[in-house]
Image (tube, rainbow, N blue to C red):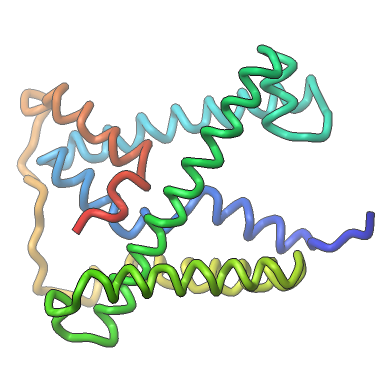
Length: 211
């Protein structure tokens, strides 16, 4: 097969799989559940360690079973084809839900840019806007792998730029409203609050469409 994707394309794809639209809302949701800085950073560090172990596990499995088919074949080899088939269907459904969640979040961001009072907009217009976004992206993918990769690169570069803007913005904004308690100690550590953070840390698409 002719090589269509470049190394840059593959890099952007991997980054997009790791950094989704939820990154712009997940930290606020985690901070709201944590209540203080200690629990907030502990949840992210623990989640990072779990993700690292998961990545190393997939890397080890991939090195032992270097076969085509990706996740399906790995699950079929390690368990059985029925399990792999079920997981693929679950992934398909979750991806559809994630697409809808991302479209909802994107529509809210765009409405906030072009419309001052988004509360006056009817939900039907927001839903129609989400459908239009999904159809546009579907059409781009329909045009071929090269076109979809180019669109992916453009959107990912814009996302990286927005993340950098969020990172540097606190150095230029003085009027802030912190939602975390900065005066914390190990005595204020709550296991319940710590566990509540994981619904946002590990499942960002679950909170992406929250108002």
